[in-house]
View (cartoon, rainbow, N blue to C red):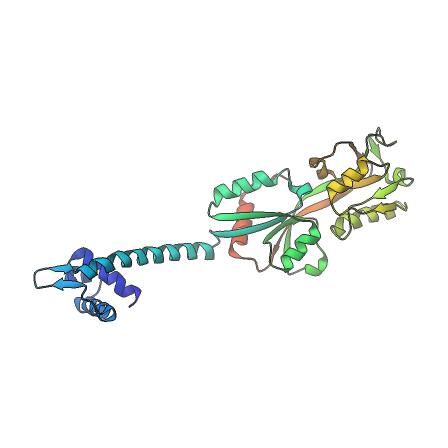
Amino acid sequence: MNLKHMYTFVEVAQCKSFSLAATRLHTVQSAVSRHINALESSLNVKLFERTTRYVELTAPGKVFLRHVEDILTHYQQAQYETQRVANGKQGLLRIGYLSSACAHFMPDLLKRFSLSEPLIDVQIFEMTAAQQLEAFSEGRIDIGFSRPIDGGYSGLINHQHLTDDPIVLVVSEAHPLSKNSSVNLADLAPYSLTLFAREQASSLFDAIISAFHRVKVQPKVSSEPGSMQALLTHIASTQHVALVPCCIKNLQTQGCTFISLTMPLSVPLEMHWQANGVPVTETWLSWCTSQTLAF
């Protein structure tokens, strides 16, 4: 018993004629007869009453027809869905993102993508840059939004530059620098400096330290919180200072004041994906290329 036999059986049942079924199937009547005989032999039942004047389903044939129609419907649906998954038009897309950098654009971005590709389910995971690298290596995410990654991943993970996020000073509202409209890095020398943990975003940490070295100022790094929200809470409650991407203004910043730097300093935001990504990754990338994206 195979699919060809089942399709032949349905045609004969609908046409009530072997010759007409053969015509509709673009084959010869003898082939139709062989298919029906093969089915009857396999099932050990008679599926049709046939004479020179008519062909009718037997009682077992009517039962078998219902099941065969269900089987063929399920097969066609399976074929359709399998092809959509293979073509990247259906499936699961997993996205890791930095909440502080992406919270202002991610909801609209995902809403628009879902309208374009309603059969692709999207799961999102809040992750630091380091956590995204680990997730990529373990195959747990397909797309990542984070800071630049270590050069050792060249060729394994592709990237696209999205925007440059200005780095600004953040202090408590009661801090002596809070009334300044701008500051230079030398102004920060007397104060304890809080930076986001290097192990979570090495490119951000290194960009800030390098900026201090360029102006020959030795920063007094005193703490490295592992989350931006923890950093803001720490700053709001102390006389420490911190240098952060401007985007963290989107977080809970009560008690904090943000001040621009006189020396332009920024950190990139990038989109990453594995070089040998799954089909839905290609669909996402193609869709992004066709959009006007605002970051």
